[in-house]
Image (tube, rainbow, N blue to C red; front, side, top):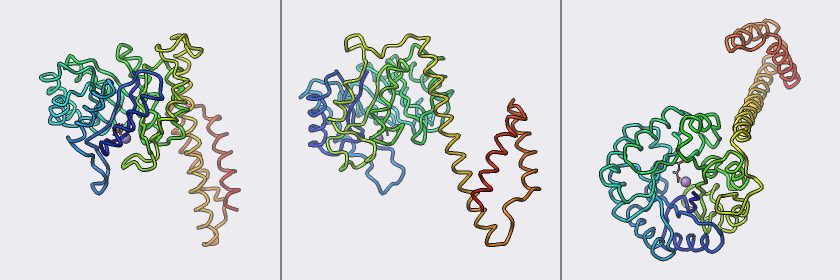
Length: 335
Ligand code: PEP
Ligand code: MN
């Protein structure tokens, strides 16, 4: 399942131009996406065009013969989207964090959603596998096929969460949303490689005919021509036998490696942030005529960190070695 289209429906022209450009160049069947109600952080920003945009999606459907998807955050949205003949609904990360909202959407879909092809549920904004699984269960009560979408948290992947959901519910298709996961158009094509590697069931990608003019998510939307290049390497079942195809056992290793890569990235970011604070402490010490090395303080650090480490099942000497190395580097930064 591949879902392409802009973050938001902005104008009839933008919607039609983007749909046409994708259809002419991407080379694989896809569902066209566009949000008409946008859950934005600040009220002063573009909040979505509203129900008018549903008519543009209908026009895409009628003109190009492709299925369409939009985001719903309330039962009223469900009602309006179904009236407009939308094929797939998705529930965004912010709504996914609220079980009462998901339940009320599920109830409306159960009553009125018989024409729907599927309902997609993004992971919640916080990395909570149980909540994501709970939302899948709530939506299963609708009788409409449920599809999970991994969109990460704070522009970072949460492979451990996605892996947990994958293992708990191998029967539920899972898509990757590299756009919201990275927040960076340059990274989107690279992340698409994960679809095949991890045996995911497709992707939802933000594509805009003129990304630099987008009214939301400017930095992460790719152009239709970038998508066309990227989709060359999509090893979907729609293409002939792919060199990327992996078996389930290999996939388990790739999932675990993805978790390691993510943890290492966070580890390095944390060390860099620590070094930065250490430099600021160095500036303070200089200004107050205090020597960089404070043996008492380092002893305190060592004792407490070793306690933490042991509580987490880590070896004392291993932790001491790491701390000594970090401390040495910190002192260098303070000289
Ligand atoms: C979107 O798909 O445009 C969107 C708002 O996504 P998310 O809920 O993942 O932020
Ligand atoms: Mn978006």
